[in-house]
Each structure stands twice: as structure tokens, then as C-alpha cells.
Image 1 (cartoon, one colour):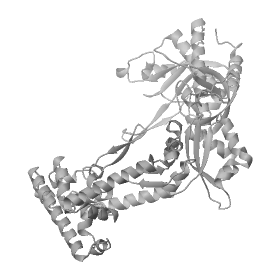
Image 2: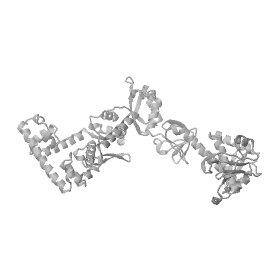
Image 3: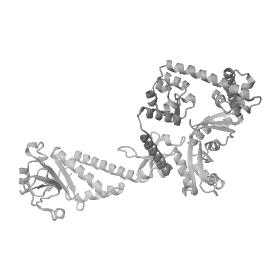
Image 4: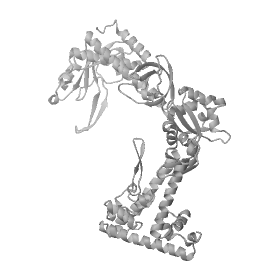
Length: 590
């Protein structure tokens, strides 16, 4: 088709209609039309030409111009898009109508003719200008000479668009409109991530549900649906906006109904106290469609957080349950004390004993024999949700299992004292019953702590300590000899804080000098835990069997580096101050 006066206004009307339908700026549609017409013109006049199209926003008139850059004749490569200064001068001062010079440069010279400065300016040279052109060029000097870098534009006849060119133009416009629509959608939803949205099911693709959210489409992936949820076209659906990403293709808004945050947001909608900040949701753990646990705390002593979330006759929690396809919800009071919180989290099971290992992030729970299945739950569901809620690895033992383990530990310690201190079974059991677990405790404990044992007088206590010390010294002597045989050097042997047994462990792992020791990381010595694929994995430390803590290991390594001169006291103090400041900032943000 040809761009004639008959269809000039139709261009603007089409642009406005598309813009209204897609809710985007009409100028974006007009710019897409300009690009599509320019592409069609290039296919007509030659792809090596720089053809540009400008559509008047009032009249709809499309102006086709060819743009050429004024170039040094020696550097001229493409005579279709470049021209020498002489040709530019002849074009400007000739009879050609509507010749424009733009994006030109103003060159400033000193008295001796040396170039001082070059500024970007906009200059026009027009022949038979239109009213719009007169407004654009008002007050601009038109008596100019073309210079290198100037761009000369002269009007060319409109193109006659064939079927293929029209189809190509249509594709360009559609692509630009889609890009503008996606940009608008992203800008509208990027700040709504983490909130709940209502939508209408539009269709289903490979198990993924496409949801109409009013200003675009969002995707609910099949792994984000609860259980075996099935939806039909036109069904209303409520989802959590999990993520909003700028994507070139595909969807940008990703929804979820299985995210723990979805449940938290539902409670915020149903419980005014949560919305007002009087009650806070501290943690949520879900087995979507089956069961969930939610921990809450009240900052008003007069409001029961559990009761407020349950509501009158369970009305509030039931509204959430109905939305989550009957998912059973345990509402649990949150507590700063980890053992107490865990006891609450394992409801409805009863707990008789809790042992917390904070360093390992593990907790051991003892329950009555008949409560074991209830504490674990169907397929481990109850203990798994409690673990997610508390962030701790939970080991559950029955009272019988714990009793057997205690008995085994008792017998092991009794045998240790019998073999090393040459005691009979009865006397060794007395020591274990009083809480002694290692030879070091017997050897270096205050004498009064041994005298409280029935049948132990001062002479007996002294004899026990002498035997323990003699045995330990003999073991240390053997370990020291073994360490030397392994090649451990005196610089490490003389380092304060390392026992002969520790030296053997280090030597067997190739740590034989003070330099070797200084290069170790604290976790390599004390051990620790890391998370791999969502599971906590234990890292064994070289000195972990000797109960060396992470902090003690760090102090020893830093001391070794100080002795070697690798760091200074000032550097350590500056590092400690920076870490303290970072911790304070993190606390303030929290």
C-alpha cells in the first residue's frame, strides 16, 4: 500500500486504538510504525541506505528521509550513507527542498587557528519548510557550512508497500507493541512481589496454569499448585506473587500456592492483629495440601496470639484452611528459648526431655514410648515440619532407647576407670555416678569434689589423682614420641594450647610446622556444618575429638599468624572493629 493522504489519519487512529487496548503510550506505537515503514523503505531503496521515517503526531503525515554523514573523502566507505563536504555543501545550497542538517558539531578555534573545543549542537538548513519545521528551527542560524560529522537528511518519495513489505511492517509493529506491553507489565508488578493477587484461569499448558491478572498474564507452575488441584477456564484463583522477572520471552510474573509466604499473607488478611503488627508470624512450615505449622508471637500481653489466629469458633483459621484445600494448620506460640519452642512445635506429641547442641545446630528429643509415632507423624511429617519451623536437626528417641544409651555410656566410662586407674567395678561406678566422665577430670579436679564420694578419704583421693596423672603423663609421652616420628617440628610442638595427642592428629594429616598450622581454617580444626542441596552436612575437624570449639580454633590460628609475623595486632583490632560494626548494623536492620 502507498502512504497517501487517504490513510495518513488512519495511522494515528490505529496507533491510538492499539495503545488503548494494550494500555501503553501511543507514542510507542507510532515509533513502532516509523521503524516498520523505515524497514520497508530500506527494502525498496537498498539496505545500505540509512532511511528514517517521521510521522507527524497531528496530521499523520509520514516523511521519508535519507540520512548521510559528512565524512573525510579519504575515509569514505559507503557512498550511500556517507558524503564528502563538497557534495554536502552543494546539496544544502542547491534547489533541493526539505534538506536538513542535524546532530552537527560546532568547532571553536583560537586566534592561531588551532582547534580548542568541539561542541554538539543542532543546526538546520531547510528549503520550503513546513509549519512544524518552522517551529523547530525558530531562532536557529540556518546559514551554516557542513562540517565533518554533520548528518544531512533529504526527503525521499514515500514507498509503495507490497504484500510482503506490509506483512513485515506488521510484524515489527506487533513486536514493538509486545515489548512495550511487557515493559509496562514489569513496571506495574515488580513492586508487588510478595503479595497476594486474584486472577482468572485463562488456560492450561503442560500442567502449568496461565492466569489472567488484569494487566497481563501470570504463570502458576504445576509444582506450585497444591496437591492435585485442577482448574477450568474462567475459574477464579488466589495466588501469591513469588517472583517478577524481566524476560524477553515467556511470562514475567510467577505465582505460587505452595509457598509458606502464601499462608502467612492469608493470615495477614484474615487476622487484623497481624496486619496491625500486634501479632507477628515468626516462622511457617508447610507440607502443601496436607499439614502446616505456623509460629506466632504477640507484642501485647493482653492478646493471645494463638486464639487471635484461630478466631471465634475457628472462623479465621477455617477461612485459611478452605483456601488451602483443607490443609490442617497447627498454630504454635513462638518462644526465644529453642528447647521450649521445639516442645511447642512437636505438638500434639508430649516431650519428656530436650538436649540442645547449639554448635551442631542439632537437638535431641526424648518422648514416651507410646508417643513416638505421634511425634514423628505420618511419613515423618510432624518432625519434618517441626525441624523446618525451628531450623534445627531433630533426633527423636524413646525413653527406652535413651535409657539403653545412657547405660552403654555408663558401662563405657566404668570400664575406662577400671582399666586406667586399676579400680574394681564398684568403685569405678561410684566415680561415674558422681559425674566424672574423663581421666582429666579425676586428675585435676579440686580434692573436695572427690571427698564427697562415699568411702573416699583424703589418702584415697590423693592416690586416685596420682594414678590418673601418672597414666596421662605416660600417654602424653608416648603421643609426643609418635608426633616426632611423624615429622612434627619443634615450632609446632612448643606452640601453647596443643596437647601431644593433638600434635599426633595434626601430624597424621600433614600439619607438621607452625606455618602449616597457620594456614589452616578454623573449621578445618574444629569442624562445622554446611548446607548442601538443602541438607546440613557435617565437616569433621582435625581437633574436634578434643572438644576444640570454633572460637578456640580461630584464636590459635590467629596467634600462630601473629608469631610468624603474617599479621599485626593493629590489623586484628581493625578487623575485629569492622566485624563488630557490621554485626551492629545487621542487628539494627533486623
